[in-house]
Image (cartoon, rainbow, N blue to C red; front, side):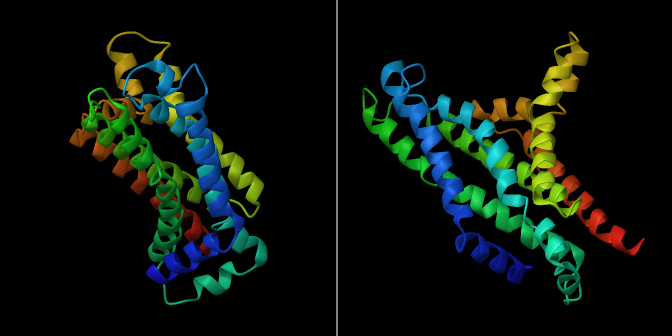
Length: 241
């Protein structure tokens, strides 16, 4: 699995994909956090990075599918998938290696956001006047959200040999899992609305962005990742049916 991970991650680094993804993410978040007056921390007057964590899921909604769309679709189109499947690897190792490469690149884009935290920490009055627990919870939630989006993207790529179709499937899938259940929940009231909303990522992500790291949220994210990767393995096994 680690050989596949190394191969895929090196392929990302040797192409413009990694640099475009990280660049677009940092430019977009930087503009909203520091430049645009309606959302800038400097104009807002509070040592708070909630703008970053409200915006980042919507950026990842497009960037992560752009990363993952080539994982299996390109192999199928080039005809190298059969060679890959003849190697002494299980389907789980193959899926896991490609998935971890996508996730690692997405997490790499989050590392520079630590500079945002340091900057706001220093700008606080007094210095350090920032809710560090909320930042840590939000960052963990964003990392878990990236994990789910990467799993959906890899599944979409395994379902087709066309990268554009894989990208569109992944974007739609990520949107439905992130925001679709909230939209359906808004049609109801009381307990049904609450329980329907709990099926979506947004409800769990909002809880973690408040600094509340609940085991139920962790189980939700990890279970969703396992479900998507299991479906990807099933899609690969379908070649034998």
